[in-house]
Length: 160
Picture 1 (cartoon, one colour):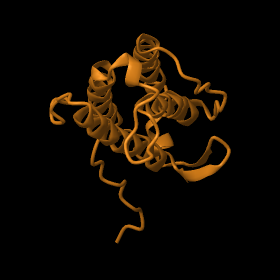
Picture 2 (tube, helix red, strand yellow):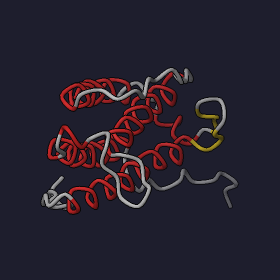
Picture 3 (tube, rainbow, N blue to C red):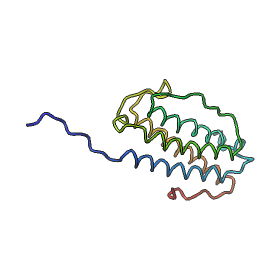
Picture 4 (cartoon, rainbow, N blue to C red):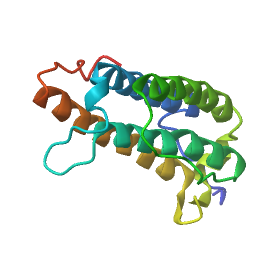
């Protein structure tokens, strides 16, 4: 009888997880594109933050989380002051390219390591990354509510 433990089965590869996330990011980008410029930082429903502030939050989490997992360096200096929609979209695209490059630098075993994101959020790397993905999905849902309240049909959620 062997005392060696088997390696855990892989449910999803790092490459597949990134593609899944980038699919969500493509959809979120379309929600940002549809949002009227003049309502981006002013319109809200039920006391929720305006969607522009939410989009900046998503930007402040995605690439910094990937970079932190890849390098152990956690950037907390993101500026969340309102900016024009075209600048949000430019930064979104730039961060997408940066995420792809940084993701390729993450050794597979790092996804299972315990770390503290941004100096205050302890967890296993894959759980921290999944939190950021879940956060984006949640906030995109708020964007859908806002678009519908403004009389704008949001993109189909299954088209990523």
